[in-house]
Each structure stands twice: as C-alpha cells, then as structure tokens.
Length: 201
Image (tube, rainbow, N blue to C red; front, side, top):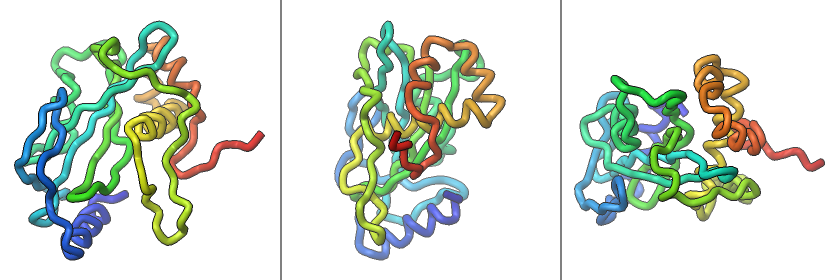
C-alpha cells in the first residue's frame, strides 16, 4: 500500500470517531499511554496512533522462533524506529541481518506497521512458530480485514513474504545465503504474495 493510501485510511478512521486507546505495548513488554503521530509522508490524523511492530525471527535448533517488540511512532522514520526496536546497529551489522516492511493493519485506535527482522539475537526467549499456522483472512468480500489477527498469523505472513522475496530481490537473496539454517526454516513456508491462496494439492 502506498503511503498516501495509508494516510487516507488513517484519516477515514479518525473521521469515523476512532480515538487512541490507553496503552500500546512497546519493546520488551513495556506499556505506554502517549498518543503518537507519524512523521513525513506517514503523518497521521490527530487522535490516531501509529505503532511500529517488529517481528523478530530466529531459530533454536530445528525450530523457527518469533517474538514481537513494539514502539509508538513519534518523529522518527518508521524504518529507523523498527531498527531501534529490533536492536539492530547499522554501523556494526550481524551477518545476514535484514529488516523488511511486510504489512500494515488497523487495530482499535490506530494503525500498526509491521517489519520482519532477523536474526533474532535472543531466540531462546521467543515462541516456536508452527509452520501450519494459517495467514489470517476475512470471509467477507466487503470487509477484508480479518476479525482476529494473532501474532503467529503475522509471523507466518512475514515468513511467506520473505520466502517470496528471496526469489525476487537480490539483496534479500544475498542476506539469506549468509544464514542458511534460519532461511531453511523460513523456506518451509510457501512463498506466496499477500492474499494468494495456497495450492490445494
């Protein structure tokens, strides 16, 4: 989705009476109550919060792991905030490190911008991701937003997105080659673009 479409979506939410709820989960489970607004081309309407969510992917042995860290967007660019939340230092990058924007979704009171980040420096503290977890979908052709989106759904969507990019984006492919064990687990997820149904065979 283009940034102007995102702003339009946020503005419509504000005009429908949506207001920021108390508290958003920030990095490491800390909660905050400050309202936020996006900077630059993602500047949001007053009263609607924008949250950057980073899904960190790693592995413990043969198991793919995931966990989430969040922070409210203030005056930073979302990319910069996602890097900070993930604990990535561009000046001293980990081999194969990658940060990629994978999705956005509406939650009561605001919009969540999601990034996938890997490798997770602390995978032992994360949850195992079941490769059979489905991508959240809606059954209503006039209400495309799923009724419930769990973090596992978001993580699976991110893995599918990354597996697709490994085949289409030279930068992603190069980084993937540096973390073969992790990417072998990511490859267990079908490389589908957003919204595509898996093969029925």
